[in-house]
Image 1: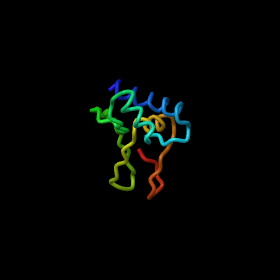
Image 2 (image 1 turned 90 degrees about the vertical axis):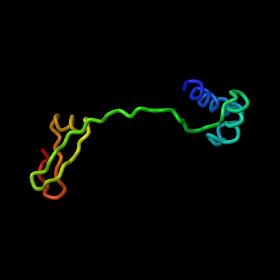
Image 3 (image 1 turned 90 degrees about the horizontal axis):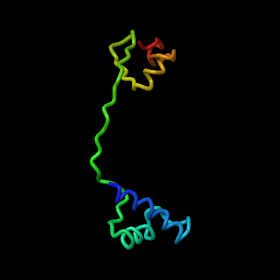
Image 4 (image 1 turned 60 degrees about the vertical axis):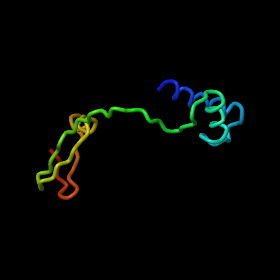
Length: 95
């Protein structure tokens, strides 16, 4: 992880120093540095296994219908601070 990522980012710095600011981010100059200096494939996207975090959802409902509105923890926190969210259909407050 570190070897590929650090090399990737430092190759950007080297490419800009050697060839100027007007080069393509992952163009020939950057690829040349990745291959020639670091002897790594010039991959611009990683293939690392990344564990997605579990997102807690809070369900709010409208009094007018059987509709659920999943809120993120951030939006739920705003509700706790006094912010109101309204149903688009009936304009009543979601609870």
